Image 1 (cartoon, rainbow, N blue to C red):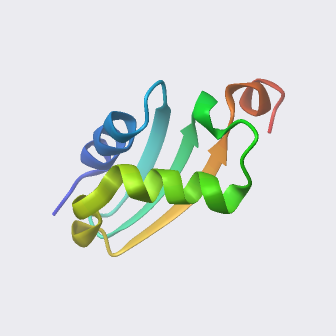
Image 2 (image 1 turned 90 degrees about the vertical axis):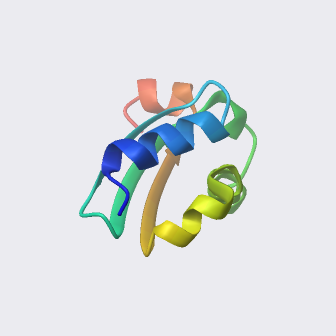
Length: 78
């Protein structure tokens, strides 16, 4: 079963320049992901980027709730 730290590392490895904060119980996770590559993309595209970066590791995650931000959105109190 993956830990929140595992999921954090997987997200950050899949998205260059990203940072993530992840909480969860081994099956259900919530993540806040900040990435400059999200700029100009709608939320659905941002979420697809995260899932794409996770790739096959998603089979170990039952549920993943995402909140995605650009660094500018995060700095402005998103």
